[in-house]
Amino acid sequence: MATQTRKRIEALLSTLSEGALEREEAIALSLLSAASGESIFLLGLPGVAKSMIARRLSLAFRDARRFEYLMSRFSTPDEIFGPVSISRLKDEDSYERVVDGYLPTADVVFLDEIWKAGPAIQNSLLTALNEKIFRNGRNDIALPLKGIIAASNELPAEGEGLEALWDRFLIRYVVNPIREKGNFFTLLSAKTVIGCSVPEELKFSSEEISYLLQERDRIGIPDPVMELLYSLRVRYSEAENLLKENHPPKGGEDDGDDEDNVPYVSDRRWKKIAGILRTSALLNGREEVDWSDCLLLEHLLWNKDSQRLRVCEDIAKELTAAILGNSAAFPDAGKWIRPSKEEGEVKFWSPDGGKHYGFEASGELILISAEDYGKLDSVPKWGRFLEGGELAIGGDSGEIRVRSPKSGVITVGSFNYPLKTERGNASKSADFISSVLKRTGRKIDSFTDMVSDNLFTRSLPEYPFLFAEMRKFRSGVNSAKSAR
Image (cartoon, rainbow, N blue to C red; front, side, top):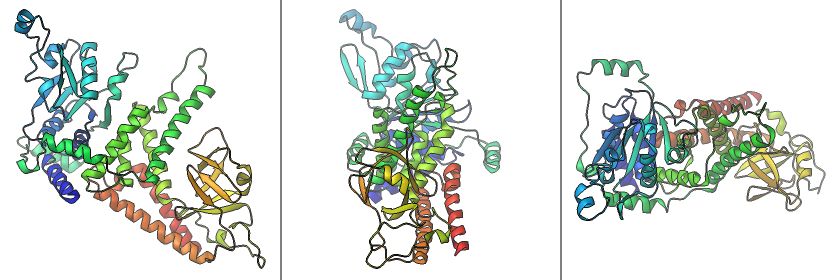
């Protein structure tokens, strides 16, 4: 069943993307959004094919009805939700709308220049986006809505009460003009706009979408992915708290520069993010979320344009650390020379004569300084993994909580790890280095394959910040080889 679903999605995306120059990812994310029961916002200049993406998405569903509308400051609810029925108002004294052919009866909706909608339209859209219902007179109408694609060439203005509506769009995607020279030439030389025709057997019915949503709930999220999501959550929540505590308004006014760089992600949004990751895994034919699905966070965490760069950098750092752990943390082979041990003595293992202790987490060797280890007790302390795989304690904030419930044990998050001992460490230094080098290469190659295989992500080199982090680890491996 899983394999069949993936093949169907793969064929569907291939068909929908035919002739859509550099719009494959936008179409894929729109389909992912609709299959998740969520909505997507497209940010881009006029003329970058945002409406084409919505039209093509409607072709993915059987007997789908589409509704499109270009918002203006003068748009009225009648134009979006249908005009008031004069006969009902006259004969039955009921204020109901004639909804046929308008948003309440559409499967796929495209709303251009969404932020120009007035308050009356915005309030009705909130209910439609969140509960998939529309209040028509005395009755609630269950909407057949698969998803709303909204678009604009700007983000919502602050102070105009648009925050609730903006939060409802889980995926935020930037549509850029065509960049590749060959694609630009193809655009200019094409005589007509290339359309696409989707075979009926590839289209999804409403019943199948409902079934997918039920199946999604059984998709697992492994503990390492959970830890990654928690690390990002703590990173942003702690940064926000620090801003409030340590950066009071200057001269009576807040300049806003730092605050604009820290995204706020609500608990409701984190819950929906988990749903998107599960849907991605399901449509890719897997039983659980993997690291490649986490690349979708690039489109899920930012709220302001100024945050996009930070979010990409944070994901790259957290994901690289989570995937590779300590594999290439110490390229200097000499660091792993084991100190001599006295006969029968059992002591904590150290690569540098007692300055650091080693413990094994998820198959990787991590180091903690002896000084930091001495600070640990049963009370949680803030800690973070530094570049090089070293666990450092201290400071007002960090990505993780660390404590030591008993001597010789370190608790990171909710996992207990015993310190390695000289007696229990039988491997030689050279053997350890060799295994580290092999594991690092295998992990990078495995992750690269995951990304290439994911229907909703780009290839690894197209994620510049993550690619740079991976290259840094590659460099560590090469340095270690040279040192040997």
